[in-house]
Image (cartoon, rainbow, N blue to C red; front, side, top):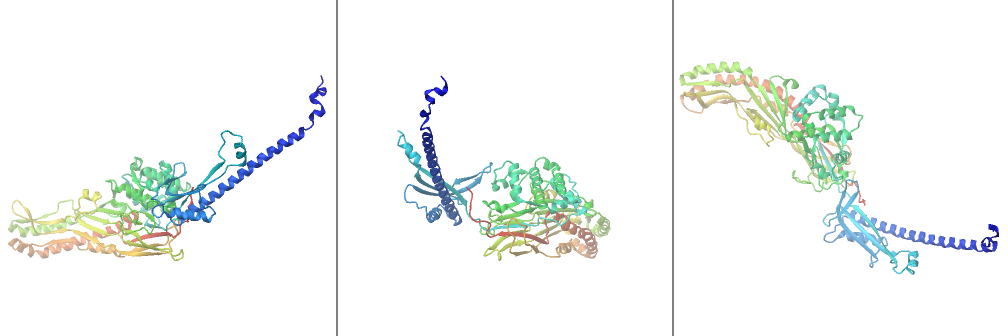
Length: 620
């Protein structure tokens, strides 16, 4: 049969099909409308809850709420929720407030950990029980095990409190320029302190001296390079990290187009002790209060100063020292050794409200220069002819008394130890009434210099003991008696100086310090004795100790009778010694120590202060 003649295909059998399709379409449209209305209602309720949670967490954090004692965090959060039309009246509405800490995982996600004793972050959780949906209600009428008609919506917010005032100090961390002469000294000095050799050009040293590195960016990259927990800067600073890794990370963070800096860092990486994995802790260079926000680390450090600090820490932890040949200093007849006793503390940041005068307090904002010790041996062979003439004359007189004069054996050399203790500065006060009038005060002192001249034990000197014992006298002439001869102890000529040069101390007042993250400004100087080099030279103008006889015997009378002859010797020795030692002080002070960030005549301190670094902020 033809399909057109089939009963099912008759025209009267198709009547009503459009109406059925229309009914189904209307039912589907109604269902979609119900879904849209329910979804929109739940979405708006969820959004309202999130807004309530956000505002409650922000208010509790900004008012510095706590979860112990009066539990003000909960009080502040509840008051905020009530003002935003979320009143906790029954079990359908809940609000929970918790205090704790915030950490960032290796995946970069923040995690809140409940700890009622901490207020690093405050969490607010609000919930509201509402009807699930109209569609669900209709479905429940025909379901033997109906889904509950209500649903609990929940919103969570975590906020950190407004940051406290943040202060930062930096100290003597840069050089102006480096010429070819200084480049040779720096290669010898830094290479010796590292136990190897360096060959960095003057352009390379200048590149380091003129480059800055952002501390926050550097630490973030370092955490990645050593697989440390991201954001846990306190732990990172306390970790033993190889100097090689520290230098490699610095090269990564610094601009790659600065070839001079990259070449200089490559030169440092070539030193054998660095390549072998010498480790240090960054906390020996950077002093940060525990729990500081990351914004406190958003500071710029001079690259030369930072790398200088790496070298100082590495040297202070080892028995190595630098030996500087006479030709590098432009002097003859001497050799100089340099040892870091204590490394510098380049930068310190923290809450000035917590700062104390105790330098060992972890809350102290304290910086210092390095404690550096130099030992120079001066060749006094030019004194031998004079000593021979005087001893011959004295022996003629003393032969009748069974006594003689013994001269110092060759090679005759004199040891000079110059120790510059740390210059330091620490925050003592601040004012944050407004950004236009903010101030920061820091108690500051210049380096205390200790000068020792005589015979110095080199093994004791090369150790990192806090202070050297007094030197032994270098005896030039010694009167002996008896048979066999023994030291008489009643007369002779020797060299001995044990002199401290007092440090200068004052309070530096910084007006309107720059914000944290900017170049430290202002930089103030505490100037000590401008003639400190001259004063040290004057201390050596008469270094000869003249021993006179103390016994009343005939030998004592004879020794006293030749005083004029001995005085002549003293004058000769003084002129020779002063002529040799005097020119030595300027190179040591002006070249060696300054290249290690130490200037014993003055100290330069830079300051930063942010009174309101940030308001309370939502973090989760």
